Image (cartoon, rainbow, N blue to C red):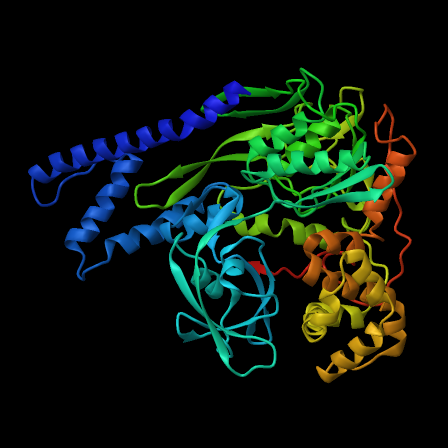
Length: 576
């Protein structure tokens, strides 16, 4: 692990020195060329040639050119000719690109969504700047720094950029509260706002703890340890780690989490690249869950660090992987900050699982658009619905430590394949979901009934109350008022699913993800399969183990269903 850290520390330094040296040499030869006349002969080396072309344009082009903008436009084209994950990030975007992984950002500390054309505060972060200033859930932000942000089609990204800002700076807000027509004005001093990467941890079944990890950020490992400790305290000795939709992040966070489940000396991952010799990372034996049964949930959205986690668990036969084949991102990027605040993220190596598999799926240099279509192509080929549709490369067979066959060629194939859950999905359900009508109703219902709903002391109490209310009938009336006609037969098929999601989203408005996920996932087929395997003592795979769960759910004949699943969290609020 020390060797891996040294590599991470010195790699940016080495690359930065190399770039600086190349620029120095290029400028030196350029100055020699200039001394020989107005039309010098430039060196044909790549770095000098680029410098020479830019210099010629700057001095001899017919019109004045913004050379800084020309460079900013040119660099992305260079990176487009590399692998799909090497990227150039402008100075303007670099801070925002890193914030979600750094564990915090500077803002006002509220979660909001656009309810029609108004900024609706969903929740106020405890102890944050907005709470200290006096903002409350369901306040509506009408003005920001004396500019109106209601009814002017402002998008979420613009609002986020406006409300976030330098620490200790002040943002002026005009708030509409309740039925009052008068704006209440607040001066909010921006401060640090935490970004959580462990969404929730709760007891999914007796003795079985469920942990949802949305990304691998700077503080993920500490959040994960807290979650493990909390679950152990209430009697959980087995764990389901949900990495579905987790696109990755910092490799160290994933390695530290894996270490909690591995005995001393077990290989976790290794990296290797043209300029970087193989570097192995081993468990150090200090983990707190080395004997705990573990199941990892994955899908096509699980990438990079998620695949390192799943691959280490699978190749060491430490636990089961349940779900669908992962994304297939196994290229290692290192961030290289530039002096103007912009940043390069350059691929310098590949990840390999303990058995020697490369996680990375196939790609061609300069063909990023085709690469980005891979997930859609999997969907069209039926890979989300049938394991038989997945073509594994028989020439890339590897073995786990207990002799089970696993395959390389891109992504981690789960030990137990779970198709998409399409139960309850009809064209009516797809319409109310894809138009945002269901989510909008949950917001409006929460707003109009906030006094009664906020009086509940726990999410369980609120959930019990909601189940006694005629939500489905009221919702279909609401949807009809938005132009979505009632279709009784389809509504009956989707009724349980619609009610379940209404309950989950309304509860979330008052108890955040701690109340949302236990309701939202109570009938999740992948989680239920994980619980079943742990209860039956099958979380430790043995040689010859093959698992497969069939999809017995029914969907409307001829209906075009959503890309994801029935129980996929598709609407996110925004934190600023």
